[in-house]
Structure formats: C-alpha cells, structure tokens
Image 1 (tube, rainbow, N blue to C red):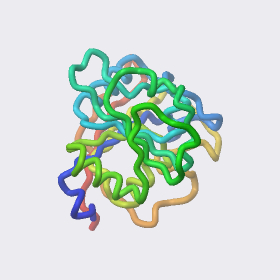
Image 2 (image 1 turned 90 degrees about the horizontal axis):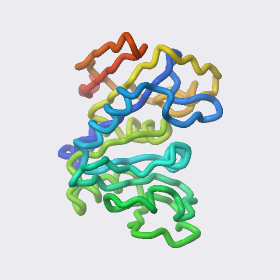
Image 3 (image 1 turned 60 degrees about the vertical axis):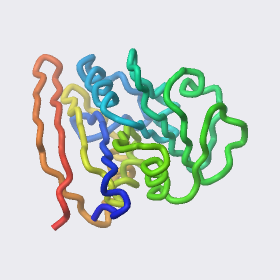
Image 4 (image 1 turned 180 degrees about the vertical axis):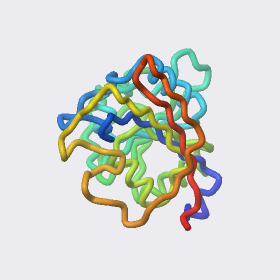
Length: 215
C-alpha cells in the first residue's frame, strides 16, 4: 500500500519500450528512437507535472534539460544519483528552468549551480518535495532502476508507455521497466489499462495504466 504520508502526492512515469519489452539497448541507446508523436506526448505529460524526476544515467545519456518549451511555469528538475557524480556542466545546469533538486547518498565532488541537495531515503525525498516544495504531481522519466525503487515502495500511481513495435533491441541484460532483468519484484503491483491508442503509421501504441490496490 502507498505510504500514508504520500497519499496526496501523485506519481506518474513515462517510458518507451521496444517490441521485446526493453527500455533501451544493451549499450544504453539514447532516446530519439521513437516517433515525433511520442516526443510530443512526453512534453504533454511534463506540462501536467510540478516536478520531473530522472536518474543520473538517464540524464547524461539523453542530455536532458528537463524543461517544457514555451511554458510559463516550469517543473522542478529532480535528479536521483547514488554517487552525486555530476560536473555541473551538464545541460540541465546550463538551461534555464525550474529549480534543481539532487537526491544523492554522498556529497558531490564539486559545487553544482542552483542545486538543492537531499539525502536519506527515497520516500523521505518524495515527502520533502511534497511538503516543502508544493509538489502535488511528480513525473518520472527513467531509468528502470529508479522506476523499480518507486515500485518497491509502492508509490507509482500512473504508468504511461509507448510500445514501439518497430524496434527489437534484444540482449538478455538490456534494461527493462523493472531495472535488472531476471530479478522480479518481491511483490506484484496491480495496474489497470485505461488508455489504448494505436498509431499504425508510426508502428507504435500509446498505453496508460493506473494503479489498483494489491489484492
């Protein structure tokens, strides 16, 4: 069950998956392998969020700014990194946008511009964003390891997927939605399909799920 203190915080996630259920290739191919329609959907989902959350590797591989073009209100930009290994030269630190929050377990090796540091558990980080920074809707854009952590503490409310039937990544160790392939969650999480939108010309399907309490 979702922690009581986080009941009023909506947490969603958005991923693209290949025909074989991978979120990237074995060598962690950057985003951009799906259609223009998928990119526009990504931006639309961002617009509804008070904060965007990504893992450090996803941030670096996709060279992300975590902004919404032409939006008057920019979401907070939240990064999860166990090591805090960032240089401060990454695009997210150079692009104007919402405040930057870094959740890490060790102190970064250099000063990161305009960044608020957070330590402790993921649950406490989410609670701090909710209570102290007015975050009512947090949206996760990767990677699989971070999504797995959200699932393990049973905090994910919505999952948006673009199933890209045009791409087959292969590779037994290629990343999946639950992070490390072959290591299942300790407990199942139940979701209900609420949106199904095939894009035949693109070879893709938009899917949306909402959480249901585990039975």
